Image (cartoon, rainbow, N blue to C red):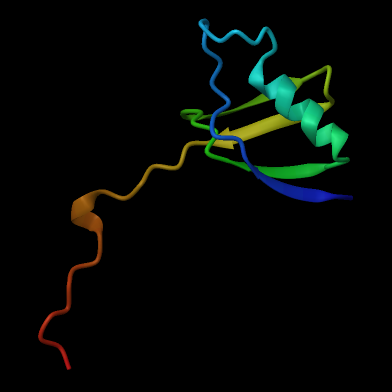
Length: 82
């Protein structure tokens, strides 16, 4: 089994995109080309959570949106502590 990681920048499809293939199909083709069985994809920009089966490529994409912490929940400065 071969594992990989890739920054895909986005998996969002746009209507004005000149490429006729869905971005997930392109990623699936590249994963197959490099014989990757399981991959961790970053910066997909997909919202919520879900899954998508790319039948032609033989891959299933799972995602869950990561929500950054609120500014007020970040650790506070510890000025004056020795």
